[in-house]
Length: 514
Image (cartoon, rainbow, N blue to C red):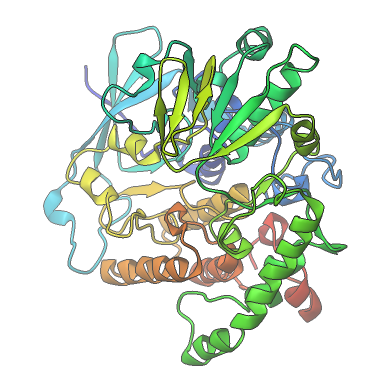
């Protein structure tokens, strides 16, 4: 059977996939979604207690505000899914979607000779097939083939493929007599199954990021009463947590999310004068970080439980690893329902877990909240030689404007660059991509694109030891400025200079072309 022919494919119907589908709707794209629902990680990698880490007004599409956007509570994952469904219905995006359609292979069928790695990028929409996509529908062994001029990959870095720690020989999960599962498996359990898994059990949660914190709290709440067992969090790397978005009575955005606050931080493409100024302002940057740390140490019992990180707060913010601590987390710790064990190395035994300090922890259940392997997700579908381009000396996939790999033709990646609001980041880059494909501006040469991505990586390296997460939070406004200028938009989006200097930037500032 001859392959179906279309112009643009979008892989994934999470937040990024929906944003791209809306912006490219005039091209009638085909959106392949492996599951039966939109929402991505909000649908498939959320617990019953999972909530957004920011306010509604900071996590909305520029042309589709929340109906109750001034509500200061953090919306649950079900509320976010309702919002995404409303967005998709409002803009008639669902007509492009093909659910239960898993992309199992992508083949390059374009002209390799047309790919000029020496200087100029090839035509983005060449007018002939470049990629062949093999798709398997759930419940069927049949593989359908499609060919496209362009592919936008929106499967993200999270979910689908669990990142599992490596263990010494004969000291892995296979010798443990209890139950081992990853947080992605925990997300699939219904309420009754969660209760059966946790209640009355000695549970060890490996990790100390948001998913681990939420899971430990759910475990504590399932083990109330004298018969309840405590949950132990095994912590390798500590990260700063915040109780809310206020610091000593001041709104948090004043410290990192305005032009004036980001002026203190290094950014790519800055002049020599700016480099010198950043050097002179480094004590002020450090002071801001310590000011926030002082509040967190006063507000939360981090020192009491040995949870004070050794690195500055700024490094976690610069790597998008700051997490909101649930209000009742430490009260459960005070009751002895949540315990903590610091460990750099550990392995399984028959009865539980052993550590490199010769201590042991008995457990009935071990949950690995150890993250996801985003690169492996991409490697499973990308062909060579493009697959090898995902591995880069810096550990970061080099994406120009967080979207285009300079050496992979006719393909874009949306949802791989992190910021304070990943929805806003994805939408703005979707707008940029749509205008690029509509030939409203041109890409620079391959060499210049690589130089730009290298500059961003170097800035991140100097800002945080966790730079491999590819986060732009400390220079996000400048990053958006450069995108706007490239599209021919005015980069200053506010009504007056005072707002430009001291108001936070969000999606609503990019709701129309200037």
